[in-house]
Image (cartoon, rainbow, N blue to C red; front, side, top):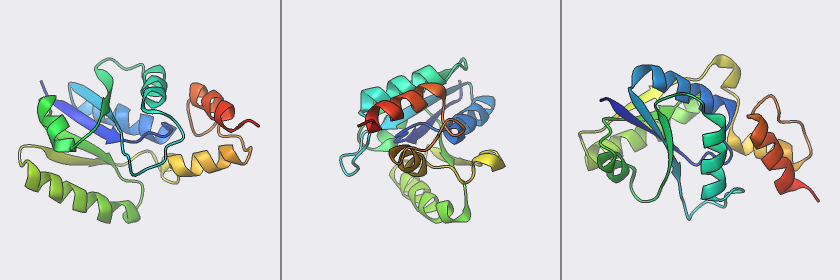
Length: 158
């Protein structure tokens, strides 16, 4: 079985993330969406909220959601995954992602990194931008699944 890990903070999950998940699902027998718990970031949603939002948004068979702390390569090894999926929206994403892929390869050469591009209509989309629009009272319904629209509204209301 070919298993891949798609890691990220997913704070919140966007339609761009869902597009990458669907693309990865076509290439692998199983995709584990790993919700990173990063003490360096100040997320809007708790890890449990992010896991739940992803589970609500993903309907494809062969896709599972799990929290992840620690090193990605350790998580991938424990899950018996052969690949890590990373989304690239623009050239500006590539430099950081390339550096991370090389470091992961150095830590565990058995795990390959696969870069996937989302549909063109999602290349401008990021969780950070979605949160800012929602924080300022804008409509984010074109950018995120319905449960996320509601969760953002609840977080940023009065």
